[in-house]
Length: 154
Image (cartoon, rainbow, N blue to C red; front, top):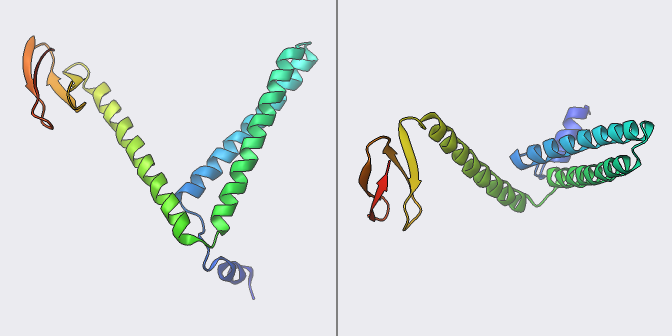
């Protein structure tokens, strides 16, 4: 039996690799690379006589290395887990949070793009983000979400 077929049979009924597992893999890789970088910095500090800086970098090495290993163990556990429903629920929560964060960054990017023509502010009652054209003086704004009316300067 070929290796690929044995691997396919082994992975049947297991969670496998999903978006959260891929994210955890990247985080562990970045942490381990940072740990190597801090090791290099501590060695450089030791050769130049900076014992306290070398100690700080050594501590940072242990923190990043430990965190990277823990995250790696967790993503391996997630990939080989047989409790697929729980792992799918975790992945769904992660994707929801990721999508929410992506929408927020897209909104900030749009606000930065429109910063010369529009002014963005929040409704004082419900917190809804509202956009109004700039250089119109004092205007009366009605919130589309809660119908609150307030006056603001653009």
